[in-house]
Length: 196
Length: 196
Image 1: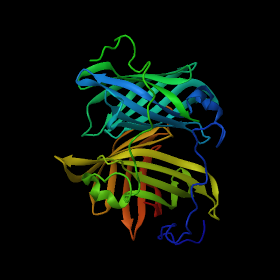
Image 2 (image 1 turned 90 degrees about the horizontal axis):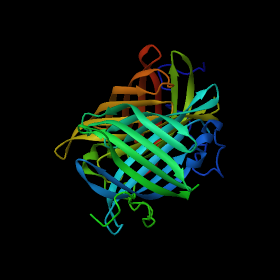
Image 3 (image 1 turned 135 degrees about the vertical axis):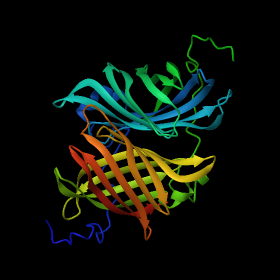
């Protein structure tokens, strides 16, 4: 160990630090090489934009726009970021809506991908969903293994998601169990690739 | 309701969608107005860069660089994004290290902030931490109320974090309970403002 004063925090007089020296990318033509364990979801890496329809037994149906960014940094996980906004009947924006961030982790046997996935997804509404999933071709199915909510969050208890790549577009259907209802269709959308 | 065919998904032939029309910002001089419920943490909004020291009973001490971005979009929550990298004894980068994303939510009484906070933090290592916290002046203390891990994640069971703004710098100390140890000092760092 160096001759530091153990009582003094090591960073107290440390030199400034250069910017983050590594790359994260949603574009497979630039940045780090995609980790081989992610090859199964290679078609998902990118930025996607499109529209969807939402609803639930307790609310009116609604239309929304959405952007999803799925990126990587060379390590065996994907970064998922989503933001949506409400649309009126003329497709004009009404206000910002759902946001979500998380990580998608391939389950490995040794260093070989098994086709199983883990997803950790969290929203600013106070909900964290831990999903276990399976890839079949380009279809990815997730179901919640655990849902954790803050004391002030809405009562969400389970979720199920089906993602697919159809004719180059990203489609998904999302079910939710909440406020006393079992798993019920909640969101579905089709997004086209706009980046990567 | 419009004359849509109920069996056909609404987005099937929908017009393309414009880019996300709203702003998220880590700079209080631009973008949307900060929601009043976030005023207590106004000094935190920005991009921070600095260094820290990590360690745990089961591993060697290590030095790291870190960037933290705390941003908002006008609604009553903050977006937290962090990425770190290991440094050698000459402060040269070794490899990318911890990443973390999440949301910080003020607990409101009516529309008044109570000084209590909820934090949802997730890492690509398969861990989701739900923290409850309290702000005192510019000091923010979080402790885990729940920890959820994927089947392949390391055994993390609790966390405690203390953030502060000292002479304009962001300092924090982070304890972790993991792999059979109780809450034990794990990370501490000092970051200076580089954005916002």
